[in-house]
Structure formats: C-alpha cells, structure tokens
Image (tube, rainbow over all chains, first blue to last red; front, side, top):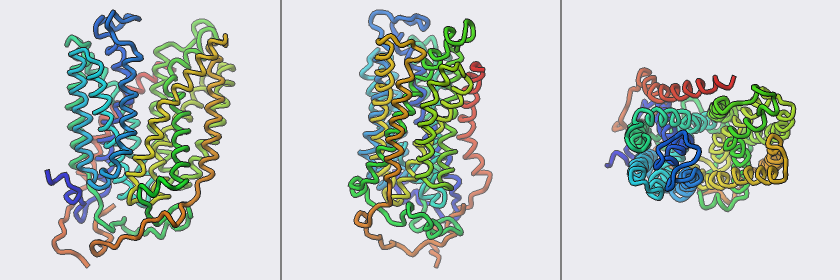
Length: 473
Length: 42
C-alpha cells in the first residue's frame, strides 16, 4: 500500500497540472451524490407498503422526517470529519485520503443496502450517514487543497473546478439513482438496495480513478513564468503561512466562519424549499386557474437552481481571481440582500420569470460562496495548512445546514398559523434572509490581513528548489 | 541544478483529453437529464 503514501504521489518532471482537476472532479462528482440523495427518500419511506403512489405509508413504514435524518447525519459527519481529520489529510496527502474517502463512502452504500434489506433505519444511517459522511469530509477537502498547490496563480479557478464537481454530483447522482431503482424495481426493496450496491461499485471506480491520477507538486514547484511576487499587489494575499491551530485564534478565521455560515444559511433556506415555495407563491389562486406552477414544473425549477448552483461555483470562484475574494463576497452579500428583498414583491406581482431569474442568481452566489472560500483562506493563511483550516471552517456548513431549513420552516409555519396566505408566508422569511446577508456583508467588511504574530516560521527547503519547468502547465 | 535520479513523465495531450472525458461524460449526462426536467418549467 506504499503507493498511497504522499512521497509516491509527488509529480515527476514533465507532469501536466491539467491532469489534476479531473482527479479532483472524479472525487467531488462522486461524493456530491449526497445532494441528490432525496430521490431515495420516498422509496425508503414506502418499504413496507411497497406503493410509491400512496400518500401515507403502511404501519411500520418510516416517515419522510425519519428518512431525512440520513442526509442531516451525513452533513454533520462531513463537517465533523473534515474538521477532525484536516491535519491528517495534509500530512498523508491526497492519494491516501481519496482512497480512504472512497472506502468509507462506498462501504457506506453497502452497509445501507444491507440496512434496507433488513429494514433497519439505524443501519442505513450508519452506512450513508456516518461512514458516508466521514468519506464526504475526507473527499471534500483533499482535492481542493491539492489543486490550490498546483494553481497558485489561479486558486479561485482551481477550487471552482473541484467544488463545481460537488454541485454537479447532485445532477449526476439524482438521475443515476432513479435509473437504477427503475432497473431493479422488483428486487423487493423498490430497487433501493440494488441501486445502493451498484452506486457503491460505480462510485468506487470513479474515486479510484481520481486517487490513481492525483499528484502533488514537488516542494518549491511553481508554474512556468510565474512568481509569487506577481501577487504582491494586494495586501489581502499573504506570502506567509499560518498553522491550523494558530489560524483558529485569528479574528479572520471567525469572520470567514460567519461569512460562510450566513451565505450558506440564506441559500439553503431557498434551496431546501424551492419546490414548495414556487408552487405556493405562483399557484392557480395567484396566477389564475390553469396557470399555476405544477409539481412537474416545480421539479424543473429545482433542476434549474441546481445548474445555477453548479455553474456559480466555477464562474464566481474564477472571477474572484481577477476582482479579489473580498469584493466577490461583497457582491454576494449586497446583491443577495437586494434580491431577497425583491423576491416577495416579484411574488405579489405574479412575475414568475423575474422570480426564477432572481432565485437562480441567488443560487449561483450560494454555490460561489462554497467555491471561493478555500481561495480566500489560502490568500489569508497561505497554502501550507489550508486544507486543515478549510476542514475546520466547514463546520460552518454543518451548522448552516441545520439553521437554514429550521429558520425558514419555523417562520413559514408561524406565518401560516397566524392566518397569512401561503403565497405571502415567505415574505418574512425572505426579509430575515436579507438581514442575515447584511450581517455577512459587515463580517466580510471587517476582514483584514492576518497579523504577523500568527505567522509560522519560514521552513528551510529540504532540497534545492526544483527547476521551474519541473512540471508543465 | 537538476537531479539525475528524478523520474520524468511525458504527458500527451491525448491522455489529458481522456482524463477530462472520464469526468465530463457522466457530468454531461447529469446536466442533460436535469435540462430535460427544466424543460417542463417553460
């Protein structure tokens, strides 16, 4: 198993860095499946009745709320494992980490498949939630920090490529899960256990492809014709490194924690409820009989949001290389506030097209927030420990995954209980989300370069610097 | 100064193209399937 070690994954001379993004994408496309997990929710909740068209399950069937726990547990373990194992990931390198991630993520599917056969929800939660969630955490941060080391000249583009894959994972995982369940519909579990086993195999191959292909640049490598001095023009880009434990003592870490938390909370609020929201805001009662948004059209709307979520990861993150990380988040928070304030008005005007446009832009900035944060961390804390620091910061995601939907559902339910029509019940929620984005704007505004007292001492190079042409672009 | 024992690799553009295809084909299929659903919105 020595080939998994970091030293065996150091790129030989002549290696091309454009081979590394496909390796990262292979892992992120696989683990991003978790965002498409909802296709299994209803089949899982109808295991006893075996009737997918039934509104209510039979006695002994799990509720949709219980099944939804699998996703929540997976996201919790994503954040916890990336925070806990970040240092290990940095020490052992991407190949061993991707291998471990593949083993955990895919064995999670196998355990869950057994759980479905035995009709044991705890076993499914252990498989897809705990094992899968730890695999998610390891697989998420490792390719990101590796790509930033290969693309010091364009870190936003690099992180955008990888994290776009995570967004794309839902687009792939959702139809793949549906196709597999349809293919094996007669396996006695509505196709779920067979789909899980097939997904374990397919994703394992895909992630192994990434683990075999990935390389780390040798110490001192930099792209041909590029020098760190070219970035000196911005005070927000540090040429120094901050170690992970030190980073957590800086105000910058906690400000970025707030930035990510608030951006994700606001975005999840829309994403999690998009289907119901568009149907209630643009129902037959609002638009006239026969003109309301149907369930099928609402599913199309969710698909459109997913595409903007994915594209925003790449577009905003690579844009941040040109305009800077801080201005990028300024746009997210300022434009996001404006759009959230506009959404209720667009709803009351019955302007469906403008509503779709506004929510798509919001979703692009939600995705962009995920993809730009590693490059922001790298600017402030340097590349040496950026994977581990990113891992700790992802706890903000786990927290937002709980707070966002709770906030939205809580406000909406309270409004409806107070007699507010369903179409208008989202207005207060949108105003609260806009308020959160204002707080995010302030947090981002307060981010300044990290003070010198937190810098790690400069490392003596272990070997003479490699020639600039050691690997090609 | 170069190190004589350094391994070298000649990466052909074909290999890079193939590596990208391995990830872009499944992603493209996923995007297409999603766009078919999006079609129902309009």
